[in-house]
Length: 457
Image 1 (cartoon, rainbow, N blue to C red):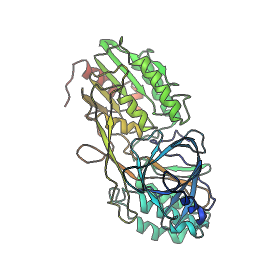
Image 2 (cartoon, rainbow, N blue to C red; image 1 turned 45 degrees about the vertical axis):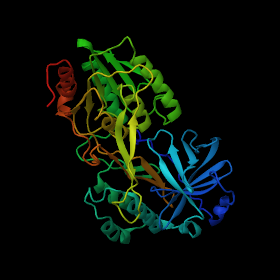
Image 3 (tube, rainbow, N blue to C red; image 1 turned 135 degrees about the vertical axis):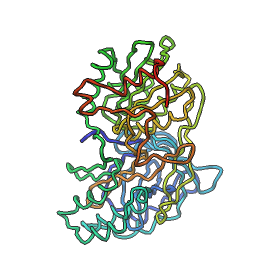
């Protein structure tokens, strides 16, 4: 299985333990966080009782337990994977309202206090192949915002596929339902059987492809001068003509190269950037290469962006679909700001290399640099076209699946979901011809531009 192509999602292990209606007993304590909460959008219900929080994924027909977390600080809970944390707080200015934040994510989720669990939590849960199909279909119907953009009639898909459902055909049917979305933030995970969407004409972000591109760049472009940082996820080299080069192979795994551990990754990224962005190193132009970047934590992408500006600015705004019956209804957009780091920063020109294997947090990083003071030119190919945090949802039979439900908006209020962010200068990227003929057109164009031998179109 290739590296997870996630932004900072809440990675929740599915549980098939039904939720009892008497969980609302936690409401007996007034004030603070104790009791039941529902997030605006996401279909997420939280039950806070003593030092524990239980997370439930709900739809109009289902209520399945996702995970449980234990309080490790007054407002912070660690979930069962041992690294993912969420923080919760009541909103003192608005009665019955609260805020939830996920470690490594940007923005927050607003919550409303509930008097009782939603009605589906008090009845028998769907089961069997048909019940599993229904929960899958319903969760997409209530949360996915891009059916219109991707020209998919989801109701027609239900009419077509539901009569064909058996235990044997179920995985293939769920796969075939989401395949036409061409969305790399959709997936069906059934043990060893995994299907992930992908935009046509783009390369998958496999470990082998990432290793091949890294070795090629080190040999051809950097002439062996690249030095690894952050468990090999970052590579830096000083180039001729006073230029610098930074390859970012993901926004995760900085502590050990594999795991998603946001606190450890944040600390490791700080150490790496302190070694790379120094007062003694002042390139007159910087190439940042995210052409192979499966994604990771959006907050780490912002952490890098904070070392690339002297002035604060809005990276993007973020909103989530919030009405199960209306795919055009969203939460109010939340502006996400890049704040200059207190450590040493680089504020000169940047050439950003992108491609179809620039995914997820690699794309939110690309979007975060679009309005960066100091100038950025994008060179290469369109990014993959997936930005949302991923809801990893349970199914009654023990499988899980991915659903994105958010939009990342530009200053003009548009999104690049589906198409990806286009380059300013379009060049081939990691094609068979480029490899065979020893070319790296995007890198060479970046060097030419930053050296003053080319102009921005």
